[in-house]
Every structure is written in structure tokens, then in C-alpha cells.
Length: 341
Image (cartoon, rainbow, N blue to C red; front, side, top):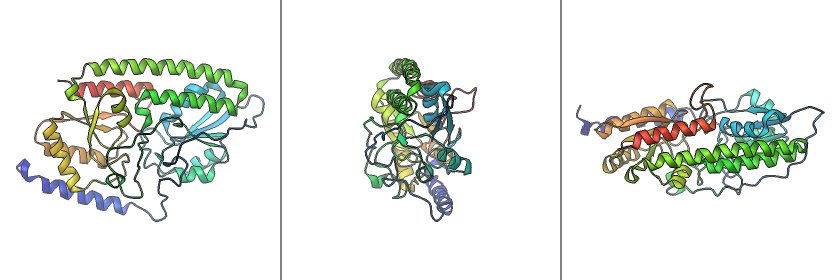
């Protein structure tokens, strides 16, 4: 089949995937949005009272995502008992809670969430079960509006107007570390000095990471600093390091959004016009997103790389993405390789 006749195949694939997605939406699902803590309302850290801890008892802490958990673990160290709700490799947008999540939230002294409704299918359970304070770890960061209007970025159930992917700029994670230190110190004043010391040590590593990313970016020709990703994930990274996020396989900041056939055809045209050499797809992206990315790449009509990046989740121990610092170093290596001359 000639490539210029393959667009009907692309459209057929989209239709099949859209039908499958509709079939998977159950009644009674709780939509993400402003009604949740961490929706698009202003993020603020609540008042934190000291936890009622027995002598030698650790502070019981829950983090929704494993990336938040990694940052909190670096700050909390030995003085916290940390539970991470979303397992490695899971998409934080679509992860649905299980019974053990409910038990962990009910017993937590502090619960850290993203702060902009990232954990779409999980937040309702967190809010209904929590007895301790729910802390938006991204408080103090100025959110970015993502490109286009709300109507362009998913249906009403999964639309975001502000980008929740703060962590893809390590300078934002410095804010996370400081917030974690402040909150843990308030909840467990006996170990406040340790939390501050841990946070400062971790922040020094984040600052070194930022410097290494800037050095790697210098090796990418400015004309090549254009990102095509599976969904709109890299806004903070692009804003900080001089990239342009020019297109996505699915619209908006949520992997739950569905592209139209026209969206996919326009993306193919954009890749051809901009001569983009790579599409970057998150390691935690669904098979649906990988299939759509592969179809778009095939339709472009020339060799184009599909390269994995760590976006919404850490990876298994012993892999490059088993920590936040490791995932970001892997990402910049991939981006530099994919966009080199």
C-alpha cells in the first residue's frame, strides 16, 4: 500500500481505539478537576499540626506517585514510614486505587499529592479516606497553562487547564524538597533539623542535575530543539531549557484524552513540515499510545525514531529510571541523542 493512501488506516485505527476507550469508561467514575484537592484551584499547604507519635515511632507518610515518593524519601530518611500508592510503571493519570491504598491513606499522618489533579482516578479515594492533611507538594510553583484552549485538551471529564507535570524541571523539584522539609518538620518537630539537612543535601544534587541538563542542551542545535511527545508532558522542561513542545500524539496533559483522526493527520503534517527526527513516548504510556505513536511515525513516510522517556513513573530497581535523578539523566541523554544533527 502506498504511504499516501495509508491515512484511512490511521483513521480506522483511531476509531477502533476510541470505541475501546469508551467501552472502558464505567459509571460512577469521579472526574478530575476543581472539586478535588489538587484541582486547578490555588495550591496551598494546609496547616500542619504535630502528629501524635509514640517514642521512636516514625511519621506515617503517603505519597501518591512514586516520583513524589522518591523526593519525600530523600528528605524524610529514616524518620518516616513511607507508602507510595501508584506502583512503578503505572500511568498516574489512569491509576485506580485498590484496598491497600485506602488503608494506607486512612493511617497516614501526612499525604503528599501533586497539586493539580494529576492523579485523576485516585484523588477521590484519597480525599474521602484521609484523616491527616493532604499536601500539594507543588505549592509555590507558578503553574503553566498548556498550549491551546481547554476545549483542545481532552473532554470535560479529563481536561486540565494547567500543566501538572512539574517534576520534569528539576528546579521545581527543589521547591518540592523544601515543601517536604517544611511539612515533615511541622508534623514531626523532633526531627526538623534532620529533615532540613536531608533536603539541603538533596537540593545540591538537583542543582548538579540542572547544570548537567544545561550542558547537554548546548550540544543540541537550536533549530532541533523541538519536542513531539505522546501527551503534553514537557512544558516545564521546555520552558526552562529552551525547547519548543510543538506537538503531541494525544491532545493535552492527560493520557486519557483521545485524538481525532484530524488531530493525527495534522501531527503527521507537522512532523514532515518541521523535519522532526524523533517522537518521545513515556515508558509508563499505555499500549494505545505506543500504537498511535508508531502509526504516526509510519505515516510520516521517512525514518523517524520513537524513543522512550521516563515521564510519569520511576522504573524498577537497577534500571536508569529507578530514581528521579536517574530518570532525568536518562531523559536528557535520550533527547540529546534523538535531536542531534
